[in-house]
Length: 267
Ligand SMILES: NC(=O)c1ccc[n+]([C@@H]2O[C@H](COP(=O)([O-])OP(=O)(O)OC[C@H]3O[C@@H](n4cnc5c(N)ncnc54)[C@H](OP(=O)(O)O)[C@@H]3O)[C@@H](O)[C@H]2O)c1
Image 1 (cartoon, helix red, strand yellow):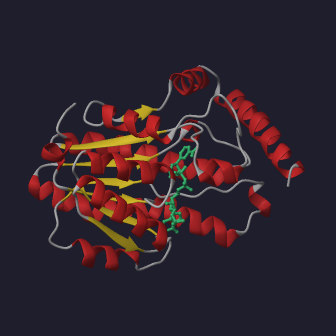
Image 2: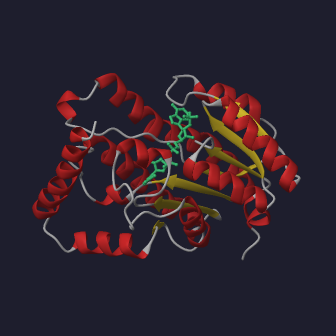
């Protein structure tokens, strides 16, 4: 396994580190001896995690408690990270919405778009310039299987994930000549609070673990622009590419509609 800390720099900044995939990134990167900036809103969870990782791995872990949908969220992150070399930026924080677009609360939709799209773009723009000066660094964007197919009943969520995948893939190209590795990481159903809340795929054998997802990311970064976690997920995406767009959307709507119906009936 390559020495990620030497390759990228001593600090990793992880958004959405209080649970799920972000928490697993924190655990894995701490074991690789990165110092960590842990970002989310749930202060207790972040502080407990920071204390645990500091004592287990003899690293530094600094908590930054911010709401990434706030307009001025970058100010606090800028202040707290100033003077530290952020080698790895993990744009992981995200939330989903499920239901018919026309009846979803527009304020919630806007908040999701801010957290899922605006925050990664703003953070990346801030940290990439410092990576360019140092001529090294790594950035990960969280896409999804839904990045590859418009998904009725998760219409704007799937669009936010496509935004991340596209941004990551295109930046991979722009940054490769500067020795900065960019990756769009596309998990399918993964066992986190996120998928439990969305009510999708409960108890399905398709579900992957957060450990699977983070391992997939660390293997892929620096080797390719984009990765899909899990063989079955890869097959689903490649199968989808063979279909005409209209058929793909109809199929996606049929499956997503059934899941939505099931969820509504079990409320
Ligand atoms: N689980 C899946 O099946 C799956 C599949 C594909 C892609 N993904 C993507 O993976 C990423 C992580 O999701 P997860 O499954 O690990 O879900 P999760 O356990 O719900 O984690 C989401 C994280 O985002 C943070 N977050 C949410 N809103 C925030 C806000 N306004 N400000 C700051 N932080 C915020 C949460 O922290 P606080 O609540 O403490 O703020 C939490 O740490 C997301 O981008 C998601 O789209 C997940």
